[in-house]
Length: 111
Length: 411
Image 1 (cartoon, rainbow over the protein chains, first blue to last red):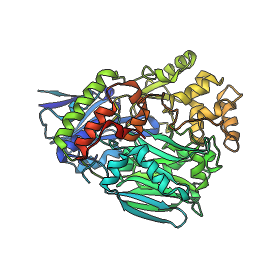
Image 2 (spheres, each protein chain N blue to C red; image 1 turned 60 degrees about the vertical axis):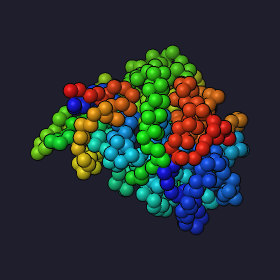
Image 3 (cartoon, each protein chain N blue to C red; image 1 turned 135 degrees about the vertical axis):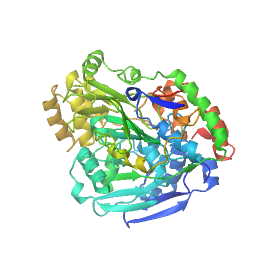
Image 4 (cartoon, helix red, strand yellow; image 1 turned 180 degrees about the vertical axis):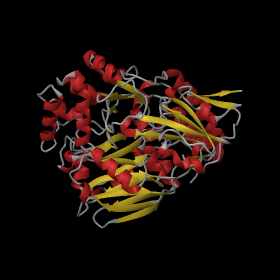
């Protein structure tokens, strides 16, 4: 199982971040998720970063970028999501809450 | 506490510079639930200090759809009575996560101050260097000063500093639902801003049962609201004139949602660059978020040229004015002319009085008070029929281990 993301469907509601934290700790917080929202608020540039075992998936407004460990992102997107580097990676849980609570189909599960 | 609230609420005395943590007792939650109802109880308790009460609903910051709502309660300089204004976007949830589900702000600071709430700490910060600056500059400065882009702010511009009934409390860069002139109360108290950031955790009594019920509600809500990511199709409640809609469609970039709100009705307009560009802009101020669709429509109805309404709305937000209150005072049509008028209105203008307990920011709904007590976006509440007092009472009982009936969600 893996997550597939379509960042142009993202509305930046943060349900994925909230539900992933709930999956991990059964509390509502935004601090323990493997996925983290970011927003350049005045410029309406927003998306999310998903931490995986071997790198980062950047859901940018212009598309998806995968940055493997050791590589450098070619974008300064997600500067406010830097704490994601300290988080646990996505464990590819089945029937993931981030998918179940995404209202737009931005995040889906694929085999 | 395992009832989705924090352990404490906060009472801030701006006159003495002291903040007192008080335990949020279970009996208090059982009696007043939260949001507008609990805010009212706190207001009455601290009435002598002419308080502004910032509060959250029972479900604010949780997985219940539309759980963005915080509530600002105070005596309105416009209506002369107690009133409740919505805090949408992200500040409601952020307030709870600071460690304080409710904050009572009473009395008046001797000098301009901003309140910085973070991780169960309340700091009083000198705001003299910020006094006179517009809301966009102040948001940038405070986020930079405190080193966090995700800080959420409630703040005033020039209109609030001048204690005008036409002012409003702005959230970060955008107007929210303050039709009650609460910006004037901030100004009266020498309070430039409340800044919030928190790493709190909200505990639930029966986590598994709560998740099941919340997901059932989520599915029912999403079945009733289309998952739009662009455009004004969801903004039918604002009665946007056809010529404004046509002009705004040409400037539309993307739509955005409040915290955990499936209804993405806040549309961003770009009028300083090509709105079809999705890449990060080099322009730091490419446009405005139409966070207040009814206020946006009011500008066009007052005669502002449709293609200028976005830029005018930006100026309204920067000055901390209420667009509905000042629309009828405008005579110019073009952006430059209207903005010059706004500068004068932010020095001196008066709002027409009206009767309301809840802000007319959202369309009227028979479940408005349910929304304001539960902590659910009132716009979403008006769009779906599944978020009833009965359903929320059942969920509240699961979440808290207390016993709630539907009547709990009445003032």
